[in-house]
Image (cartoon, rainbow, N blue to C red; front, side, top):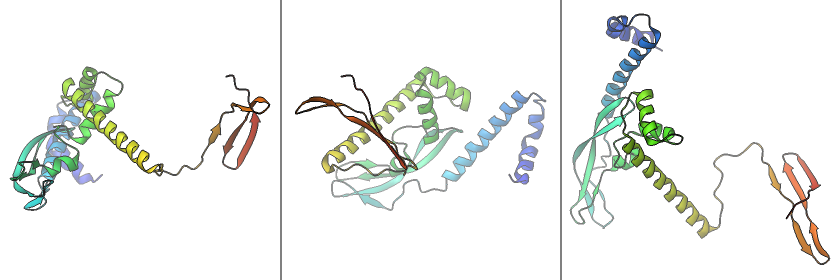
Length: 226
């Protein structure tokens, strides 16, 4: 890390942090609060330079017309550093009266006020805890107040999105009958098939069980209890 940045931070906050004393826990909490404020300000400044979904004076509309750019409309977003404000490009179609905010869809915000980072933290905690417990842990770990109701709505929205994606993959498979290509190629592949009984002309017989691994193949008989 650039020592000049540390020197500037110490010059700006050193006197205030010195009042905490040599209590490591208290000093850690104080430094974390300062860094959260710096992160909030830096994030707000960086976002202020972005077009936030502006795609020109108009964009195509599904009705066959065009959505016209109206203005940049502000929206409060709750991030892991605190609340910030984003002005997003807003489009409106005068033919079918539909609207569009491209930045919300592209950034994953949707109609939520939680940033992707804070939303991810809420969902990870909600996997093993109740919404109320997740809310308390978010405040304790990140210093951000997110209500249990907000986390519940978020989890339900993410769940619906995942189910819709799974349904689309299933429909595509049923239509094409082709397995999707693996994203990662495994270094080693294990394939196994359990033995079973089959009926032949002279009665029921036990089939062999085979196992396969890279560079090795074994065949053995295994009793299957039906």
